[in-house]
Amino acid sequence: MKRALTAVLLLTASPSFAAGLTSEDCRSLGWHFYCDPAKADETQPKTQPPPKTAPTPEPDPRETIKAIRDKIDLLKATAILDPTEDNVAAYIRFQREQLDRASVFSDQWRRTVWQNPELDYDLVRPTGALAKRAWSDARKQDAAEVLAALPERYGVFYFFKGDCPPCRAMETALKPFTETHGLHTLAVSLDGSPSPAFPNAVTDSGQAARLGVTGEHLPALALFDTAHNTVIPIGFGALAADELERRIYVLTQVEVGHDY
Image (cartoon, rainbow, N blue to C red):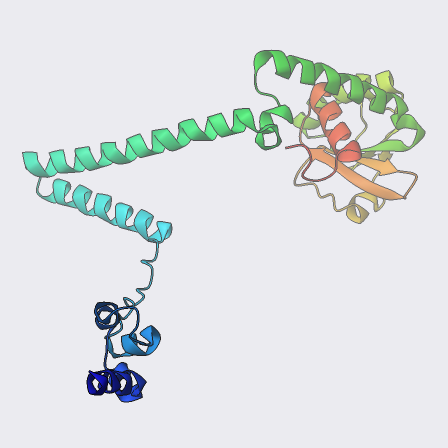
């Protein structure tokens, strides 16, 4: 008995023996048998983690759109060159799918605009009847105030010829317009002909050339800004009074790109 106990003690003290045991072996030997579970488990094969796979890249929407266009072109060409029932039906079906897709996009577009006022250009330049009328009334009021102050700073250059029918038509609108708003007008005749509407017209002595006006496009109108000694072309051809008001307001009051 003593020898057996000694053998057991020797075995438990042997590192090489203990290293060959598993955790299950240690538990079966009982509580009195020393075993290092950490070392015992070193002999068990370790489970390798699965290899990491790269995520599948999302398809490029531009390539998808290109593929749709290519397919519809192919189906259309096939249906035209070989107009069988199957070919024509295939083209119609695919085209209808894209029309449905476009309808969904269009519907989502308007919903987005309605719910995001910063995206709604209709708030800047209304198109609805009620809002458009309110906008138009406010614009007319602003234009009236601008035109009332116009003579303090601006004068009008009017270039014409005697054999120019549009010039005669223009004078019937320009004369009452300048009188109503108190605008000083310098009428300049390019050929020396008089103007029934502007009896104080002068013959061109280089004014037209300095302002870039030729006899090709007449009549010609421009504003002279006395504050900056600059000339602002208004337009060419016969213009009605309301068009004159609109152009003068835009050219003198509105920054480029803010009203279009």
